[in-house]
Image (cartoon, rainbow, N blue to C red):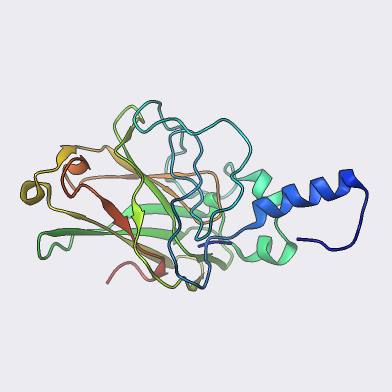
Length: 234
């Protein structure tokens, strides 16, 4: 889900405006065309974007598997840490409707295998008392017990983002798919969790992973992720 001024203004104000607009790009571009990949923060697959934009300021992303991912547990309790920089740069309308990390819980549903493919729904549930929206692709990354990322970030399946309205207790899901490693012969690792970053947020959630080994390199090792849809799975 992927969430430039004309008038001549003093140079300092113009620079500040451009910096803010760089943060405003949303995940859910209606074109549906996948980008080269999501912008990242160290060790995570943070906010997914449909079109390349200026990445958030801060340290460069660490190579996969080189550093732990610091994430809150997937409690979904309101009042937790949120992307304050993103909030500050968001228009009042967007800020009042977009679901923030602290308002969501991440979970992974049951595998629905078929034709040599493993298919898991990645679910975001609104745990807050207000109605909010999600749109586009979440970020995702497998991690081991110490928080080190396993394999590259998932690639995006082409799709048309839609705005999903989540009343309290309601959910949206994205499909996470990969070839069965026993068939493809890919090198594998067994994750402890899947780190999930809601669209246009920087703070990730952690969902327990019980789906067994996943491909991390070698033949047919790509993991793919779809846009968010209403509900908890197909």
